[in-house]
Image (cartoon, rainbow, N blue to C red; front, side, top):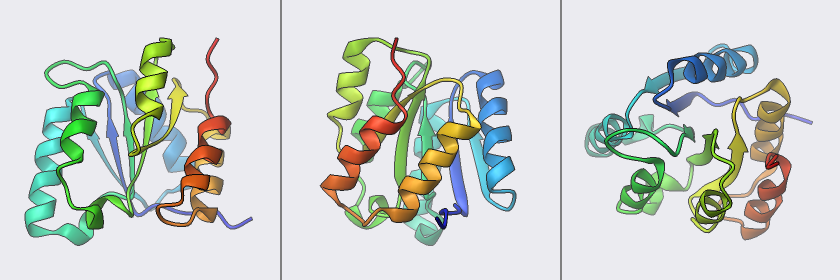
Length: 157
């Protein structure tokens, strides 16, 4: 199967070790991807607003978003993303990647139409392979694909 290769990826996570692990896994599959890391969701939101105003074609294709962060958590970030035009969001896949296995967090994330799936840290080669395969076969804005992606990466104990 042909796998999607992302040209631009955002990692939004306050933990430097988790960012390192995530970046390392992504680099093994997408060595030429532009990866931008943010330790605060508010900083990533500022970057997205600037792109929307000036360089919309550089909008990230993939966002890996943590939930529990200082200043702005992942859910507040998602709420603010809803203010952006559909034109920006239709080509951007968002995956929650978090250490939280709290059932309320999982439910809230999966009830947000912007989120493809919920992944428990750390990101592994196997989980990223699944992301690539699902993203390669997805049709934009397909509810069926959203349901399909819900099941591949959830490993809640």
